[in-house]
Length: 136
Image (cartoon, rainbow, N blue to C red):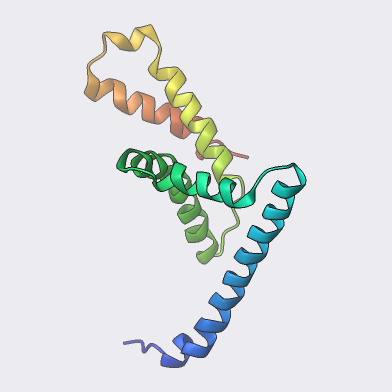
């Protein structure tokens, strides 16, 4: 039976790490704001439009989650590989190439007459072969 060290999750370390992340996020917002001012726009209006576009209504939240979920999955896959001691870069590209291949195969007219339980695995296989299944 393994034990978990409480010291690993000490509040000071947690606050220090998250404080640094919050500081970096604030720095990024300030730098982006300067760039927005340089091009002649109001950064507060730009940030407000960004927030409205992401969270302005239930439909916008749904669209934001729908578009970000595949990339969150790819990020989790890379994080899992790193924890396992493996090195994998290009997960987003693999995801997009695999999705493009699956969409392309899914539009074949030959698959129009194939039953769904057979066509869907063929489309998934095409995405797997062209995406992360493709050897480097």
